[in-house]
Length: 125
Image (cartoon, rainbow, N blue to C red; front, top):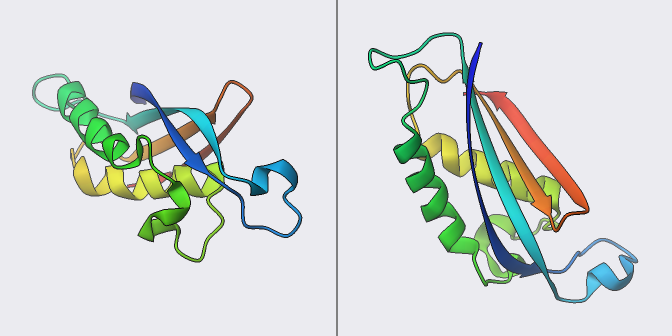
């Protein structure tokens, strides 16, 4: 199995909406790092699993939507707690819409919240 990984970082804000979230219930910023790991059993005719430039461009476009914004105000979090786990799935869905290489069979999205915690969402694509 081959894998190709791209990553980037940015700052965004959120607050948790669960009962009794403590200080996480107040608006605050995080330095997020997003890692995309594409996986597949074969390479394409150019010996790529995924075109890194295309993957980086898609990731950049997605991250630009969230950079310096309040996640709670985004439609994709409407009615949901904007946890790092939820954020990983939201990004997964957007990446799979943007990057469609036939050789990619799986994708894992890991979102780091500062240097302290991370969550991942992975599935077949």
